[in-house]
Length: 160
Image 1: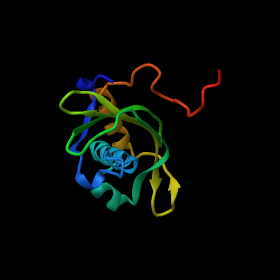
Image 2: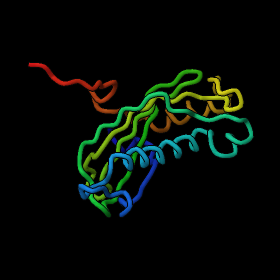
Image 3: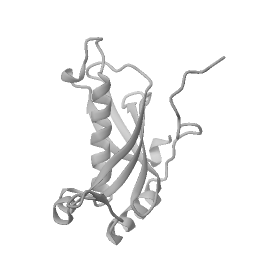
Image 4: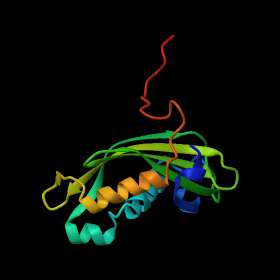
């Protein structure tokens, strides 16, 4: 993904507490970092803390696919860039790319399907018009897309 046209969602060095018994970032913390990026994207489209409290709404993750491409050591500067691949009246298809901030090396990716939810009822709901408009603006402003073959990957053992 060309990050020059992707939403800059999160930056942080790898923290000591994120390191596992193998001496590199634990898989759980990759997901945490991607979660922080999703939170930033939610804020950017208007599903921020104020909106969630005022309207009893949120985005829930329906499906996630994480690819762990490189081991990451403590102190490595991370950056996550994000894009909305697709959307409809209540769902977002989101892609995050985690890179080393100093070299640009791709470390991991996350592909998500998010659903807008009325938290009072626990049921899916249509995006309010204002949020739908923010999503459209976001997609126009941040037009980066994943590389060919990055989306919709499945887990399988190749057979020969």
